[in-house]
Amino acid sequence: MNPFAYRHGRLYAEGVDLAALADEVGTPCYVYSRAHIEERWHAFDEAFGGREHLVCYALKANSNLAVLEVLARLGSGFDITSVGELERVLAAGGDPTKVVFSGVGKSEPEMRRALEVGIGCFNVESASELDVLNRVAAHLGKQAPLSLRVNPDVDPMTHPYIATGLKQSKFGIDIAQAADVYRRAAGLPNIEVKGVAFHIGSRLDDVAPVVTALERVLDLAGELMDEGVALEHLDMGGGLGIRYADEQPPEPHDYVLALLGALERFGARYQSLRLMIEPGRSVVGNAGVLLTRTLYLKHGAERNFAIVDAAMNDLLRPALYDAWHDIGPVQLRTDKSSTVYDIVGPVCESGDFLGHGRALAIEEGDLLAVASAGAYAATMSSNYNARPRAPEVLVEGDRYCVVRRRETVADLLALESRLPPDP
Ligand SMILES: *Cc1c(COP(=O)(O)O)cnc(C)c1O
Image 1 (cartoon, helix red, strand yellow):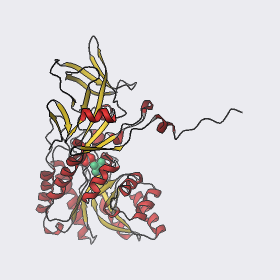
Image 2 (cartoon, helix red, strand yellow):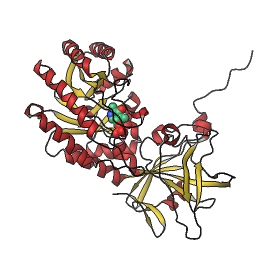
Image 3 (cartoon, helix red, strand yellow):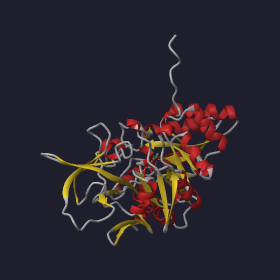
Image 4 (cartoon, helix red, strand yellow):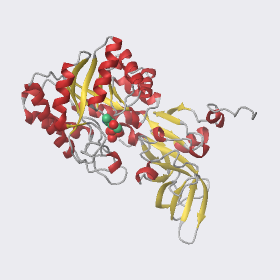
């Protein structure tokens, strides 16, 4: 279901008229559809059928508290990368025992807090991190639940910045070294080996590389089980892509079925493993749009620019990854033919663009909706150029709720102080 559709020439989110919403809330602003988030999460969850499993939503895609609460109420697990994200899960009413903690650089205070609240699993990414976790757990008199995140050396055929399962990547433990690290872990007094994890990258439009990674990890799991290392779960990471332009990623249901099929081929001994996945983008990406208003149209000798009130500080993906987002008018015009524009923001960088070469029938003052802005959008926003961050709005049916208010300039200044007087 696409929750964003035109009715009589006006763009709606579910039952909410976006032009009316923008008049109330102002622009730029993010708008998310609760129904879409729920539908996508359920699609993953239901695909596992009767098999024991946990869908751990990856917070870094979108960590707004209301979004997390929508998922927590469904019984979702969570994949976190920092203690800040852990506090967000707790603040949203999420269950700490359903939290997995990923990331190459967990600090000791982060480990301590995660142990105190009793998270489900640490996905450890190096031998040194294993030792530190054991020590921190010993101080607290606790057992740290552990998976190793192994790096299966598979090319996910995606953007180099979001490929994480290649040998040269900083992520995970080389699969060839993983058995040794597991043997060490099994001998540490404050570590409890729970499972094995991998995550090969993001924006995957094909399940084949994940299946290859899974097969390599299952070989390792078999080897470990032969040695008597007890494994309870298998975490297959996230990474399923969404349609930004004309990509054709598998549906969540088919993606999970492909993974279940590969598991089945490996035989009965793997059937008792509890399965986990960590989707982020594919749950929230197409649940959101960024609304922005056209400030100026500038017609140059070679190019035309639509200068809008959203910028790279609001949506970094075009500048960071050269990412393509669909951009369309919120109210369709029948009184104009279209002109090709570069859609740019007010930030003083040539990299500050939302889209290049877009044919649009617009006038100054018109609203635009930047599509697929539910993931890696608000979470990547910044205050560059001293721009207050945009508000976030959650739509449910014909109602909406501002779930993060617009920052004010006072918010921006609040953490800073003047110099003491010169002597
Ligand atoms: C980023 C990340 C995810 C989620 O990736 P998506 O592409 O958003 O699904 C899952 N697991 C780990 C370890 C990650 O770093």
